Length: 530
Image (cartoon, rainbow, N blue to C red):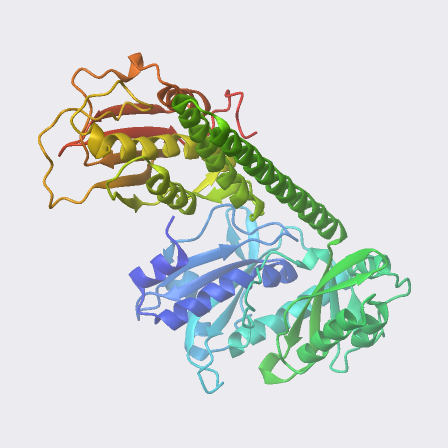
């Protein structure tokens, strides 16, 4: 199904500003649909002959729909859309006509012209029409709630025709709450409550106000109820701003352990302020869960911080032990363990600064690569370069992957570009098999370099570590290598990461290690994120 913007751009000559206004209407018109007990369809003219295209539709949550089938993308002309043509050409709300039938469903048509106000604040030309179609099959004598809903809906419909609804959206706000069914309060021009729905009355009762709301000055009531005077003042100022014709941001009121979200909308049909509409929602449980999640996140971050500190302590102890060991082989083994522990600590350090159990992995790779060039036992200045992005990785993948990359990067530097006294020798297979071999002298104009490449494709992470060094020895078999470094890499890649690794000669010389790691956990995997 095409989007509103796609349909409008393909079939009409509407300007980008016009389409943006239609998007704002479609983002906020659930309110009008629920108040109207009617389906809303957004129609744009296609041709000068009176043909219209439906680019958006919303169904009410307060009444049955008039359309079982979706109308978006439908192009209609002739008598069926004559009411739309009147609203579009005359710029007025059309409410005449007899009910029509859609199958066995009787419906009442209305048409509301849509205007976009000019930069000078004047009503502009009509750019579209909102069809308001009500299912009449369940028509009955309206209650007080329904009468207030319909009266408010008519005021908002006139504001659409004037170009003053919907109001501008404040940064960071969404259209998810409050809704009509959560609680509705209608105010007169003086700020007094003329109607409050039962759910609104219940929300205020939870804040500690047990009396009826009708007749109350709502701004003054918010000042009295709020536990924090500043919150009460801000909530009251929002009500007063709406009465002046402004659209204030949403406010929360906390009192007696309860929290209520309020949204105030001005009611000014034909440009005359007649009061305000206040939507309220009891969000006590939502805020309680938010606070619990914040506490949990803080605890998890503190745990990662302590794990990082403990790992750094372990690394420091191993480093001290290495200094006291006389055997060169034992000292090298301890120093390798220090680097492995430090690479894991990097992941926990990143997690300790994040509220998610995921890390931005590029920064970690860059730090590990920098450390590899600093500690590697080589006399050659080796450049490190990252190509592509790892993106955000879950902690369970990041911890194992950083150890794998640490081994691959360190060995690419040490064994791809060995010290001068090893340049003429062939050594036994090393940690990842990136072992120097006897080879012709390298071109001095080519800078020694290790490149880490990463890209994602179909929920798989593809990583390669490539150097332009001395390459692998003839007949090298990674499966037969028994050194600890390669065993760690193979165990982590095939076990923890459930991926694959291949060591091979580079296309233009040197060595290339290629990893493929799945990013999605299997439902049958014992290590599933579930």
